[in-house]
Length: 60
Image (cartoon, rainbow, N blue to C red; front, side):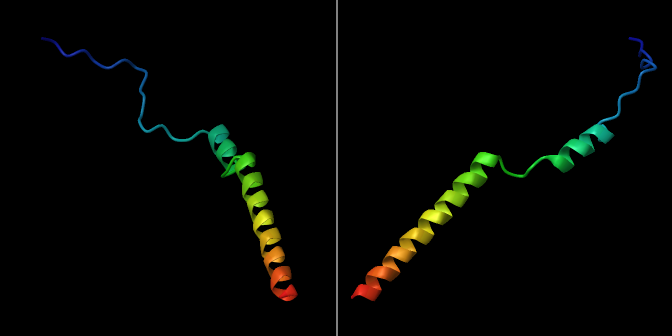
């Protein structure tokens, strides 16, 4: 059995990140916009509930 010499095209793994890859990862937001909006809505609801509770306590 003869060993074939590797082809002249060499592939190194892991491949170093290209400039385009670095550019894309730098601009990519950590969370999808929808998740951020949902978190903000939940915080607003909590604030409204706290305000209602405070008003009820003041009435008593």
